Length: 562
Image (cartoon, rainbow, N blue to C red; front, top):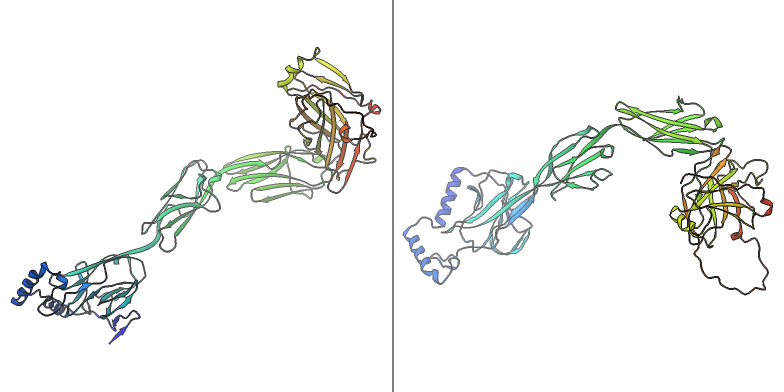
């Protein structure tokens, strides 16, 4: 009993393995029907066919029996099938008549006519009765025949499959079956974790199989490769001079477009002695506040970190706490007192070595930052301003300025003396202008000197304190340098980096007719000295316009190295 598939193909209900005697009888029938026995009648037929060759093709030749030779409708093709899938190899002919169709693979006969010869249970014949039917991938085919179905294909099924018709000169088509095999990594040089010493050369290898041959690529999880590339193709990955930046999880991935890529992971650990960095080498704080000293420590194996003040090791107390989060090690000092100011260090060690980071806890002001424009609107004066952060009131500022050394010679040509004394009628201050390779220094009082905050210093509320000063007697079109220092109850801070500013070039004076409007005094551009202290919660400002009442303030020259 047979069944008909959705494609109109009749399928034997129970494929079976045929005994050898049946195979012989089937083959003999093929030979007889194909007229391979050259009887007298057969020779006459062959002669007739030869004589009609010049007029008709062999396919169109009428034999004595009245049968026409069959012609293939389905061409030979190449099928690329993934493992585990099912493939149907079609074979349809016109005028099949009584000719027998045979499926072969190499010298092995798989089927003869409607009889399945192969013992492989995955092989099945799909009968195609005459007419127009559709096959998977080949719709609307006419003719009849038998298609070969192969289920659960395997890599060893790859090769040529021949559909042959037993005519006098056997005709055939060939289907080529390529089995696509998903990638599989079958060799990895290292599994799990790999520990190497710093400076070593590391070679990671990964090999894979599949059809087509898969491409192997290397990546690193959540990071680029040490070369800076995101991915590198190749069976191996070489890392020269491994360091802590080379550590991480490396991934080998094989892909050939069939199925999902296959991946393996190798975790690379680089062993090295501790390397210590400080988050800030100088920490500014105030009395009664909390201070945090931070060391960033890189090491493998993980280090042990010990804190020192000068040469004394610090233990964990109510005032001193220690934290370790990742590679960030913190010493917390609560309720800072004057005795806490000084030099600290963090010592990190493991079995490969040790390293130390140095920090300073101080109550002095932070480094001054200039915030005035770099170009003066005036040709002979400049209003310079700066700010410092300090948890104690600044008592004194020291401002340094000079022409840039490259311009000293040009100015000396206009001066008969090396040192010139200038009297400023506005503020009665004596400023000594030095045109050698030396700094001019001006000492300015801080807010406490001028009693801006009577009673007590606004600590710890005041953290940012601002100051400005009008420098007069400058040269036109000249480049100047400036630096500043601040002093509070804990001493002088570090001098600031060099700040550059320029004076305006000489221009013809514009004649302006006298105005009938009254004069306006107190314009901020005319101020010579000013100061302010403020923070996010409190703002208080005091200005002091220097005049004859400030004649008691001392201004002097301090010579510094260039």
